[in-house]
Image 1 (spheres, rainbow, N blue to C red):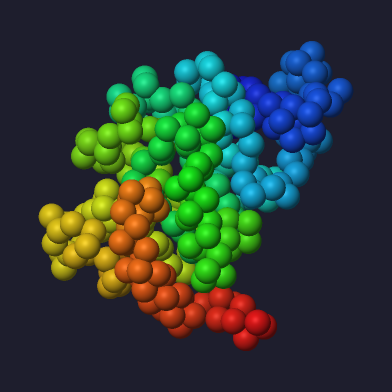
Image 2: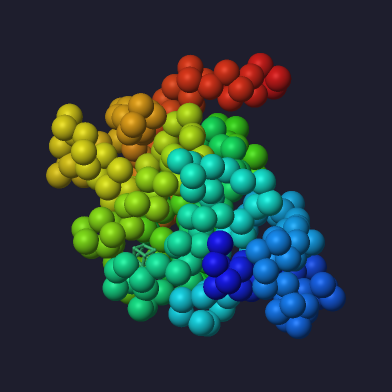
Length: 286
Ligand code: SF4
């Protein structure tokens, strides 16, 4: 870890402290950190300040964006490393926070790496951060985010316990447009790394951009189809079942989608019970 990485993590934790506790704890003073610039001391500083995560956005607090300087919320690396071929979730988040691989880096307010469980049954992948997400740095926020939470709760999934929510691109596009193919391509390595790291039992793509990006190498999928023809069936990404449904933002605009989305969720839950005994056990306990 470089000295710059340590500074980034320090800023993450300092802002986490300010937002979670409402004050800056003495051990987070700049001067003290400057003294701790050796590798060992830097690690000590990080361990001294564990971030509590009892809120809806587990392990996630607003922090400063090291790329664009203004305040930028990103998920704070947890003390517990989750490794994916040598890359932990903390490593991935740092890379996202510093990324300038596409033009969205110039227009974003905040990077939006994702929120939720670090040991999820399910990864929910949306198209791109909405204006609410861009402003907060947190995935699936605002009315659409609340609807997503209700949809997940209906099948015993939650960002608090067994779900990780993110998007295929980590920065919002201007005027809330869909990301361009070159932007999804530039960002693909991050979703790929997150999936490797989190190892979900199943993936729920919420939206067409998410579906066609994740399934781009799947020869059996006609990626020119709209969601109303892609939804309701299972595909595969590196051996993981992938299911497609509508993004909750679309459901908010078209209430007629509520019924097919609910049918989709029941189909998805049935498959998840098959591949995940721990998920199936949630229904036995009911
Ligand atoms: Fe980097 Fe992805 Fe953001 Fe583009 S959208 S700048 S590739 S993190």
